[in-house]
Length: 68
Image (tube, rainbow, N blue to C red; front, side):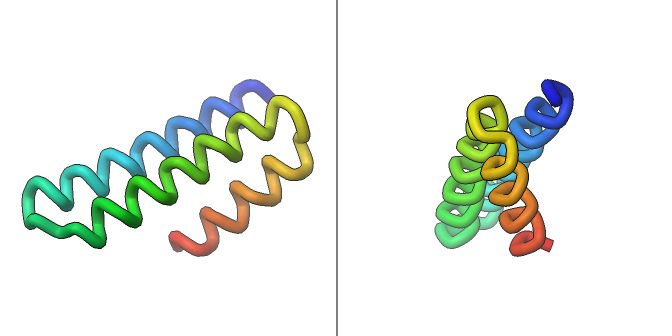
């Protein structure tokens, strides 16, 4: 389970990095807002995986599907 938590957190960090790159390269404020929001939510899902496995897994799945 720890590897899944780390994978979700790494994905959240990549989403946040993508938002920053979009902002700095193109000046896109919506990219920065979306990237930081989804990054925060995915990192929160990773934290929830440690305490409440079901809720963390469901929330990260929903967030990933929204991003897809």
